[in-house]
Length: 230
Image (cartoon, rainbow, N blue to C red; front, side, top):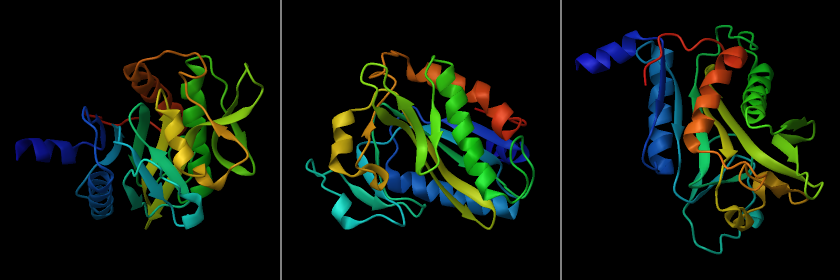
């Protein structure tokens, strides 16, 4: 009980799950955290994790964009967007934040600025590994141009949900996932472009290195990690 009180008294929880977390478990925890943030009983939280191979459907997902030849579990995500793949080798970072207060690049109650800040967080993290991430006005996520092929490919996805100005869901960076698993869907409804990873781009980095870069770039995009605990 003492640990729970200490965690609640801190303003921010930054934590990481060492084991894979099932998607339904993650959804339940995020929703509970968001309710607690609104009620003032829970701290804001950034949660780093990996999922087992899973396809998730956003509110705009089409049944025709799911192929799933390996029979992976599929779940409704409750976030915006279309189909997304999650799996080992992908760093998922869920952000449960009170968006009624200002933070770094984000004015209060500004969803567009919040999504822009998440994109910038990814871009600055990728830059730590000499990878140039880019936005595209007509496509969600963060994109790179593969120097070997000249082809534009997606290296990170963004999906958010905001309930009464508390955010949940977040980002997913492809570190070294099984890229063929993305072939089980039309990722985010975009069939013209491929999906890549840091490993495919020739960056053999550890997940721990990505986690450190995410922590180091967070403050400039989304504000200080106030009283953070791991």
